[in-house]
Amino acid sequence: MTAYCQYNFEVFLTMPTYNHTEEGQIFTDLVIEIFRINGRLVAYGDDLTAPSGLTSARWQVLGALAEGPAPAAHIARKMGLARQSVQRLADILIKDGFVLSGENPHHRKAHLLRLSPHGAERSENLKLAWSEIANEIAQGFSAKQLNQTLSIIRKLSERIPTMNR
Image 1: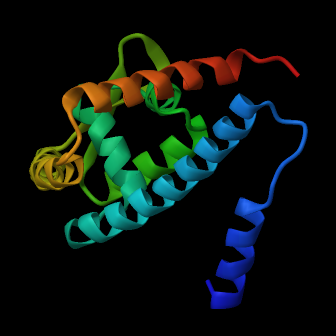
Image 2 (image 1 turned 180 degrees about the vertical axis):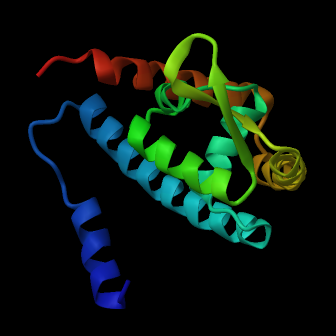
């Protein structure tokens, strides 16, 4: 992004909004910060996973499969993504030897995905690396503060799909 585009983006994000309650404006500011942190996490995750031949998106699928075998649709629902996106990532991970696909006893067409030994090893190595990073980032915050933040974000997240427009 050029400096000019970055400046305009920042100006747009800090422009006052209208017709918000105080809480609505704070929520809008929170959403903007979530977008920023998501961008930073994805970029950081891409840097972290690149030596393993992965991307942040592929790492997310590996992380979901670390909890046990699942079809692409289950992973997509859990992560709030489109099934097609997860399937596309799974196909790449299968081709690259990180994931195995097999028969699903509960569904003829939805194959069951699971980590290959190679994928499990890479996933474990990334978990260890992330643990160090997470500990460093969380340093200076109490568990209570972080749990309160997590609780609020989860509650806000739960409200979003229930709103009818």
